[in-house]
Image (cartoon, rainbow, N blue to C red; front, side):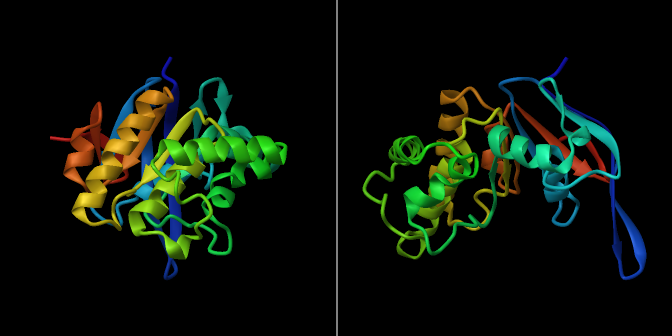
Length: 225
């Protein structure tokens, strides 16, 4: 059995009074330790897929299993707790809280999980140093470059030691040089933390670095040519 399995996933939205099917009987199996790239045209549903896989959104039908947990069957309160503990998210736009500094942003999942403050701070500081921000711990997002902000977001995604990392266009808002550095960081963190990673990307270099590339088209995943 694969570490992550998505079976018969359907997801639709109502747009202008019309029902638009984004995911259509979608199937996905990912083995533990794999890094899988999801590619496809803008608006095809890559973000929707990641949101369903990670429990940020619920499918209309079908189920998602991660490890021995059927994520789609969890009640809302349990789903929130599971997502905070076991799923790391990195988005195109870092979504850092501007009023908090780098450490405070990175430790946020642990604070939500009610880990004692000293432990949360120690773990967040260690991860920020690991991603190259040891001299930026007390800087707020507005004092950081785009690449540095995204590194804080990576640290935040990993601070709770998740089972799976979901990254949605993580380099889409970065220049080429900064994006390449973040590619390397994601690969390093994937290996160092024994992650299973699914990355939605338009970046061919990032996709090529993954174990597999799947294309989302017509609401289903197919092997990329």
